Image 1: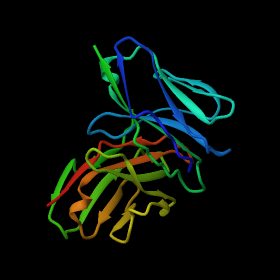
Image 2: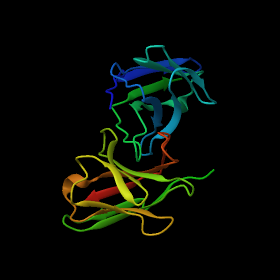
Image 3: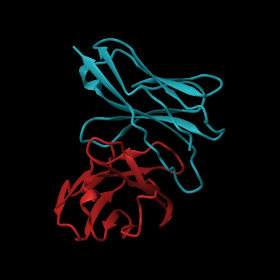
Image 4: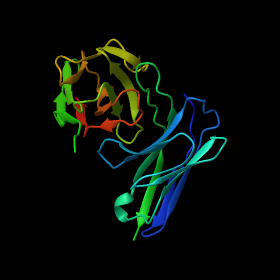
Length: 112
Length: 113
């Protein structure tokens, strides 16, 4: 599984756009990029997943350059409730499941 | 919206005792997972389960751990002889076939004394 590197923490203010970049230099051809969000004492929550270019849903956008060696999660107009840990994961589906390796994540703190 | 449920929310047990943590995955999902998270640390993969057998497991998932899908709805994690270091939050997750989009339950906090 490809190793990922993210900033340990980020600070932002309410209403700002937040971009969290993840490096995954050893990403394999079959690998997808998936982002999760985790609040304290809760399970991770799926945010978005992509393979290449740009993916957007009601929560976030995911930008993946052509070489796929990095990806950027973009959260538009964050609020205090977006304070959480954000995990970038890279891996393929495997033959029987998806072995999911979480890194340390990026702790986002949104201030008023 | 369908969700993964876990019981109990908090389990306290003595060292050496067996515990069973229970999960009800989302009904049409085919892949099931257990993770643990020691307080203040990252989420650690334990095991994935598909078609009534383990498909992947981590080095944490040793002989003390086992998983079972005893019926069409429950998915359980058993720890045979708990150790102090097993104290953690245990999360169950499920996903549709071969998709990394996993849905996590609220977790069971296991405290081993």
